[in-house]
Length: 127
Image (cartoon, rainbow, N blue to C red):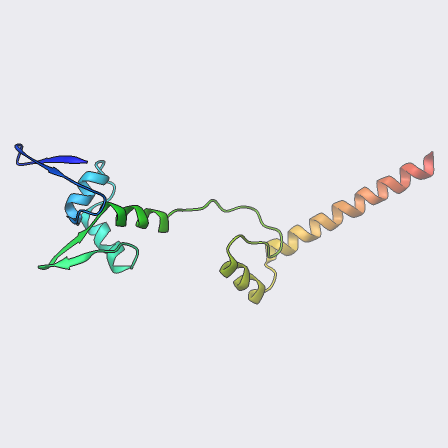
């Protein structure tokens, strides 16, 4: 990536080039949705690696990409019981035991199975 500074000088920016958080926010989030302060908060939270040089926080494009991966949101899926793609979450669910919704889902499934079995029995008797 090449950017101009002061309109005349061009700088080559590699993936590892240290940039200020303000510059990162302007370059990689041009719509303004992510600001310097939001990036600073991510540094404080340990999600974005930065270097403190002369009181200025610097990071690189590769570190922003890593942060984005860490912050990726995965869609939740309907789980029955304790089947969870995240092993940590699965352990927590196992410790807590079944939730109200999983119990309700299990009861609904059981009731549906009983009704299906009754219908099958009735259809066998009539033939």
